[in-house]
Image (cartoon, rainbow, N blue to C red; front, top):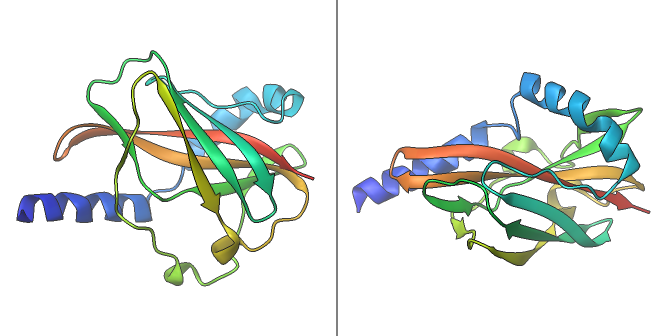
Length: 166
């Protein structure tokens, strides 16, 4: 039981301290995908594990996130937590949307949702409490996923979905 609690605590700490992507990797990803993203505002970012994200029912305070899995090559159980990060596209550059509250007051729960293979699921996300009501613009939501094999034996990968607030 203590081992499980330690694993959950380590996962929560990793999610709390890690960004959506490392800045250098994020910049390279942005440079590679900016043109396609601008042409198709709701384009999704896929993964090596067959995960794709898309957004629907978008409002200035939240959206429904569709997580789909098809193909890919995961080696364990795919899972994700409650945390997410928002970015906004300004003059062709992605920037983190700032919290409207003190960052120390933002906390994420430590559950692990399972991504079903060859299936999709929808999750309601409301960000008003930490990001406020967002103005019109092009945004993306980033989620981290784990390919979990055993306690301490997992890989992490980020995926995102772009969306428009009109």
